[in-house]
Image (cartoon, rainbow, N blue to C red; front, top):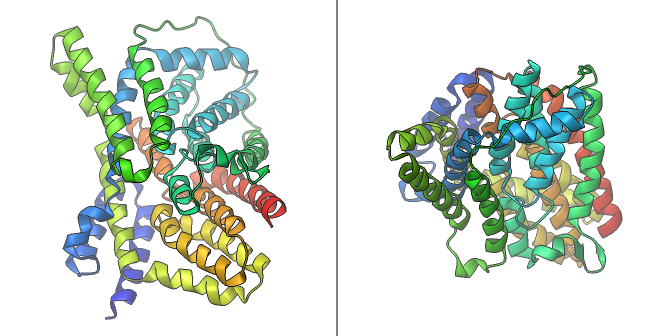
Length: 426
């Protein structure tokens, strides 16, 4: 059988199984990855490089820091403040999602979910409600804001490198509105949609007694993660390792772990913190990276890219529309990092052939690919991490449950971004 056809069949089967058997997602992803390797679709020598170790290390390190953060009762205090300031459950959910969005504009989406999800869990337990919708909303808002700044998401970093954009260019570029403000408008409209989706959650929220924080050091570690990730974004790529963000998160986790061991004089605390790292999610992501690496190696992503060149037929609006909406659909089922990495030079080539500046197509690609991952439970790493948190707390979320929230949220945000990017950069 043709290698490309084999890759397509295996890829389609993998995602069908992932959607059908959520409890076995890690096993399915790793099994599919091994199949891609065994069939020779992805050469052995490229397997290690197919995995985004920066993301893996970042997730593992942040999970560890968050476990220390939770122990201090800080998430409970933040939850109390939100409960105290909001009139009902639906407003509490939307407030949490907006808080997650603001943080995610400056911190990796997955890290944001890991930071804010414990707050949602705390609120849900205090109010005796399911945390499912709240944590889904947090993941969606985090993915949306990933396109807002240079450090918001790996895809933004890729765009910055291709287009030579620095941190401030995402706010104002060439005298025009940058992606940051376009994303904020989209976020406000999408938040209004969440209020409609959660309109039945009218229960009032009340606060009887505010929590007290036992130790502020883990909170400073999280602030250190934010500050160092932003600082690292200003260092040119050629002067830092590709796993810089992952090393920052792991390094601060190790600092927190060592401090706790010294403070408690017991290694049991180290084991307890390590147990909080969700290895199910890490194996799932690693497997998916290898699967997508195999699909890319087989030339499927390149074929998709060539389609845009021929289908556009010289019409800039048609090409822009195809890039945005195809990116939305493709990013709903495949990781957007290899897709964006492949499409950026293609977009630059299309713009050169048309004799226009590439920024309209660049920004359309980024918005479509970043937001498209919100459509399905497996379309973005943040979604996978959010569902992993819910699974650990005893909640198995079906694809239909996720998409009842994700589809209206994502379509609203994408349409707003699609229109605004065209109006500003056409």
